[in-house]
Length: 252
Image (cartoon, rainbow, N blue to C red; front, side, top):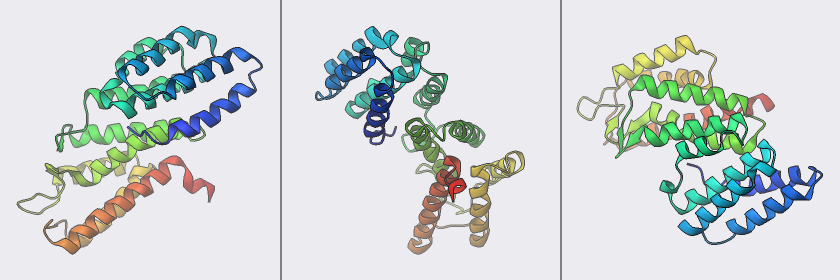
């Protein structure tokens, strides 16, 4: 999960929200919470921060509670990816935080329980991967003005798009033996283009298929120039999918 973005952005947003809330209670709770997060992360401080949240979230509104929980998540994950159990977060805090925050944790919970890639091998079929990617894109479309939440979802979305374009080391899109592009994956692309033609994902797949057709749907990974071009193309298209999904093109 993305660990760098949220802390500074959320502290800024939260400070603005609390300064206009009209009471000292939420600001005091946040100040104390940030003091805890200012300590070097350890199992003890992570649990200390979690216990403080449990005891005080009822004094905050749902937006404030969700922002603090997102900060706690980042603090814990910076220490150890295994220190956050998203199923537990949902069970314990869904009633205290906004629905859109619960939805974000549900996407992360699914990835935690059933990661798309494990040990460099794709663990879901192309259909499920496409479904997860489009679901995230739709969610991002509802959170474009919520910078911290949007960017958390975009991090996962980019990972999914990358896997749809490139596969994984042990699950390559171009067969290591025949060098041919996966026919099963091409068929899934056709489904996406047919069923979700206006999606950001479909837009990049159209360009990707043009690139693949130019290769004759064949690539030998040991050909350095062509291999480098393949990775460069995929990286650019992932960035383009991110730009489109985030609505960045609508501002130009």
